[in-house]
Length: 180
Ligand code: OFO
Image (cartoon, rainbow, N blue to C red):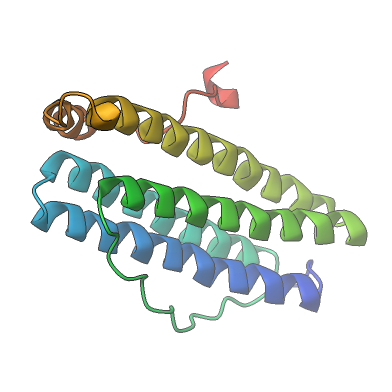
């Protein structure tokens, strides 16, 4: 099979593949933290999102191989330490998503520079996915602030929020192409 991506692109895609695996570890560790700290619904939601990140990893692996490159399975760095509280948990997740969006932008920028329109097109899926995820997590942060009551009346609504997130969609509110 002839190689249809540059060496530079193969390298950055491989790095991103491992980064998506890291994102999965982040969700996995925070889900486990939520589970042992009395938020089973939030844990279910975060475990679910862990699977999404694994799928992203696999999507990149397949793309590299399908374009004649070679995926390299490398070490994943350790997950971050436990969050201080639920608010911190969501804020940390948002920051991880923003950081990941910036990494995706690097791939799209390189694809544009190299006029590698296949990878440019491939990268658009991830650009859209990151917009969705940032929206999703921002919405959860807003709900958290409402539920926690911001000092007025305690945080009994966190119970409802936890229950609702157990069955919440993993998608943000932005419509994806297939839904239009
Ligand atoms: Fe892979 O979508 Fe979030 O990070």
